[in-house]
Length: 405
Ligand SMILES: [Mn+2]
Image (tube, rainbow, N blue to C red):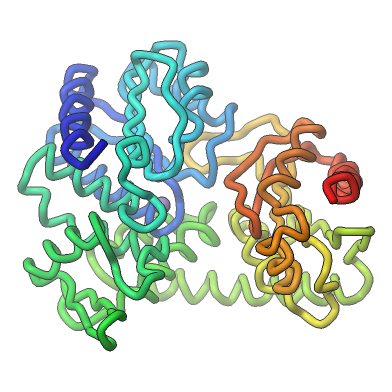
């Protein structure tokens, strides 16, 4: 598998998309990589004559997928920066109604339907860990669609930095190809910081915008600002640069986050942190509303090494999953998002295999309380669980840790 076979597959996908209709529902993730990927595809498809309806999503969840495909009413659906792993569920809920193209960069499952084409880069050996962001993948799709879309390559770089693909010091592989195209066009400047380290500056909008903080700001807009128009402000900033609207929204969200985090921190310190044999957990309910449910993970990360936390116990935070999804309306569910993190000393024990990782612990327990699993790593994991079963989940995890050792 290679880039050549990836491009051949993209060509096939484009031919099918063009044959399937000229109205497209475009579904994308709400972090920096997802917003840029969404913006790239919206622009490229619109330039190609498609009428695009764009929907930002925090996560794939079956009732959401079902509504997207009900509303699409037979016209094509494109997913980017999510859905690769959910391909079988999408096939099931699509019921062969819409041609569906998945342009993801996460580990993926095979499609089980001819109407769903899963072109996740991982299936072609292009690593979504550090070689290709969803946004870089979207720029490749866009240039295969029409080479004039090469002007969108800088957005691939913004997405790659948003997903920390420069963690080795600089961008590599397909992200680097996008970077070099953007440099050639004068959209980005590389600042060398020694032989192995680079920083990037966005020069496209006149002046110089340091790229890393800009990318991180897009994730704040898209995630913290998910229900208050943040994704739209973020995508506009990607195409027009910083503006009063961008500065104002960002300041507003940063202040909101700081204030809400302080309130919850005080609550935890005054007895609202429950401690069991292997877990320490808490419920914020709607205490972070109107911020998106990604925020609970950030909060757990923020507090993991605080003095009042037990350095040897897993951390679980529960936040209400809102029933209103922007652009899709209201849903009937009664769910809590659970995010888990670990204090640094426990993290080391997980690396040393003295304690089980969250990638085993949370899915094992969450499935027993009828939960659905999000992305799970050894040191960070998330799931959705029915309201009222939070404590049961914790008890199950305590038992699993006992048995697992
Ligand atoms: Mn991504």
